[in-house]
Image (cartoon, rainbow over all chains, first blue to last red; front, top):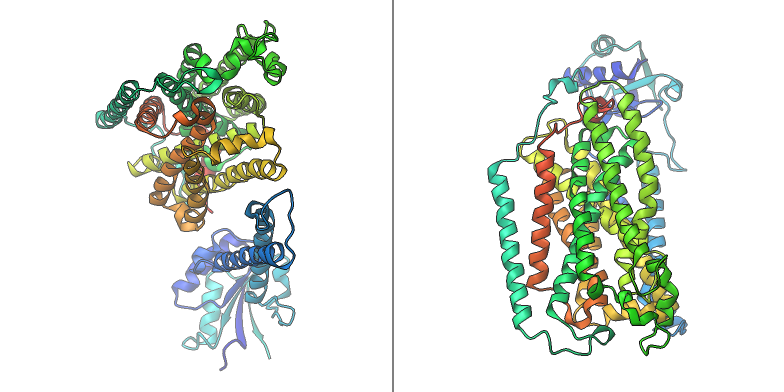
Length: 176
Length: 430
């Protein structure tokens, strides 16, 4: 069985039941692929055992890129390409460069962070996001379990684990 | 789940042990010794010879002592009033996360009465040596010392009396600000302690009302006190950002002091309810307002630098082109911007006491340098500097303030046990 193709889905009505269920399901040795919720659930990262996001590192690197680009651009323009005396200051008057540097740092950090997030969460324009259950944008929480990853357990075993954890229904979903 | 504040001893009190008192007392003695050494060096070191100082007066060694007294008193007044301000902000914003920390913020206000007395008494002693505008001849048209610009600003200090006599308006403002701050502090303090006895929301609403009134008053008085006590030293010069600049400096220093006390109490096993999430939020405040201070500092600097109008740029020329003060401009920026910005940027640094202890201590020293740079160039000129007297006076003031704050903190419950949002604070999670 190939990975990322066949899933078993536990559907939950309530986020407290969901949080409890995640611990139970993980406790019984099942590896959860992903949990989908219509709204942010507080503390879900902890029970899922997720590591902290690396997004701040991307933001920092893009911010540094912005700082470097802004300073390079201004030095090149003001000192080498077209030197002008403004207000009797030196061509490369660094304090004057700071506002533009600040703005470009913020701009690139923000754009970079959004871009990286889009790509990492498969929301990129050329990506094909998979919809496990249309109701995750409405009122249901869905826990997706990759059957290939949990091949040590039979399907009916997994169904039992999900049912016992408080799932209101258990479905199967296959992708091409 | 299932945890609640009721699992904890909410009547816990901070034990201000004899050992701790001894440590503070030792620092006080060390400070006093260094201060005395500084005074002796200055007094015996021939500080008299220099006749071409400010306003044609000869420079005397005690002027440096006065300047130091003024720097520290203005600085620690700010830290004290920021404690009350931050307490009031929590109520006005209906904040829940901070409910377990409120008593720490509030305890800083206990320094205010002392600060007020020191301020008024020291003005009486040192006013003439610190403030150029107190000189009578500046307002006399027939005097060669007559100064048209200062004469134009005279009413701000002397109204309703004649210019050059007794600065009635200035003194009235000083007294009114301190009186109102202390009254608001007392009101908030009493209501907060009253809450310990009556459960329910009633007191919370009352505190919110008084907090809102205090914030309105503080918005005006913090700005005006910055003009009065600091900006008027450079009497010719003015900056429309100065009120914000001083407030920002006070606020970061106050936040750092409150964070330090919280981390210190936490390390000694108090405040079981407070966890790394609360510490993280305090860290974020220190981080954010360090950047805010830098923003204000730089905005003031950039506009003056860019426009390059002599009457404005003199302030920075006096500092940047001085052998005495120019290094401290960079010390100021390094301690108050680069260090907190780079070190407190990561989440982990804001959640662990060790980083916060280091950075907050350095910020408190850093903002002392900020006030040092505001006061000394205008009062002492090239006779100023950072030496024994400065270190000694900072240690003396610092230990006294710490003693008053901790001593009063130990007298009541550490946690406002009937605060309606205590449970929310307990479950705070970020």
